[in-house]
Length: 252
Image (cartoon, rainbow, N blue to C red; front, side):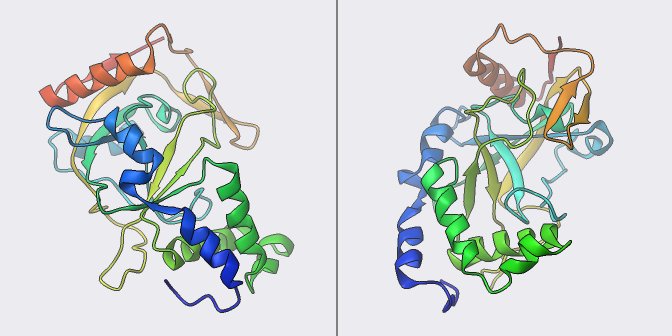
């Protein structure tokens, strides 16, 4: 673990106790609900049509998001296929990809106690004033989140949607921020993610969204989509479309 001499040892130990191996994590159960026919976990990322062309022939790679303001810093943001349309608010094209989490360490920030531990950790940071008292809060947040994940070598943070549309993203949905590391186990910031493979378009959502209330919500401009089908049925259909190299069209 990276040096954090300004953090009480008891707090470091408590956080470390909640950074768990993949088989012991919530992600392991979600992955079981999201596997392809070979038993490999699948994730989905929605993107806009302007970025989708490269995924048509299977050569496109999921991208590490490096812009300040993302929920857990520089990471590849995806959703377990168990939540098949949860992140469709970010684009109409659903790209499905394989991933191998067997060696991952997971931090489950869907749990309130783990959220509180992170915020307590931030309170001991020497640069915390930049977060609360300057105009540089986005950059400070980016630094804090990256430093936290690096210090505890967290491969994946699970978190609840913080931008929502009630017809697509539910309160209990789970999103993933996946770390990519260089040879020195420092976070890779930008570029293609090596954590995912076999990326391919599997879903087209016939909808567009508009940011409202400072992007706290995203309103559907046509829909909302029909939710007659449970998520598990949509997961099965998307998984089948992915396996066949087809597109599943979802509409209002």
